[in-house]
Image (cartoon, rainbow, N blue to C red):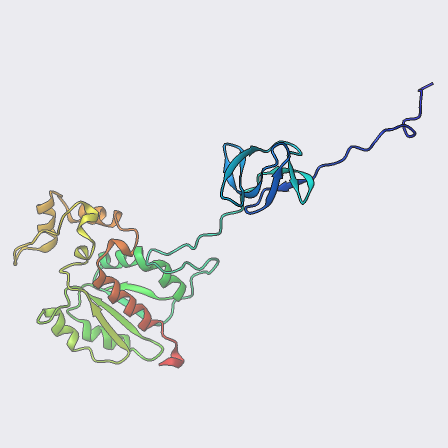
Length: 270
């Protein structure tokens, strides 16, 4: 009724031609031309082969168009490999540690002169300090620094770091700092009149910070020189342009790194 049994004739099972990823340096032969070469890349959807003489030719990725070890294959372009995970850096330039929560605050502290200093330190070193469990506290100036240090009662497991503005030889600040002699306290500073000046001036569109005559409040003088009405407005403008350690001057970076190292030293290393 159905004619000859299909299982008894000259029927042949269709030969399956394997698909092979055209990985770089794979050596194949083009069936039609006989050109033999290594895979060196792709152009406009075609594979580029280079023979042993350095000659290159492009071939379309047609089915069964190539021989690999004498057997027909269909080349296919390899799927792009996943890009390696990039290391994320904190604003301070440290390698960010994934999945680590902030520690409970330790007894050690870092003091800075005011709220602007604290905000700038948080912007750059906040991630690092949270992992270490170190709190930054703003002071209202350092005129009473020796008394404040004594009240803090520093010790090997209760270290104190202090960041001071305008810490240069002969300044009022240097004389105050000289009175702090506790070995569990480290005072560092930068040469700038105010923490504002530790931000690179080009970040806010200045070639350099204006020079303010002695006797005039520095922040108010800066605002007048750049045409900003209120110091609070100027500070928002400055802080908005700071996103990493690259936006501030090296003396501030060095001083903060020293303080962080000092207050995070292990107790058994003291």
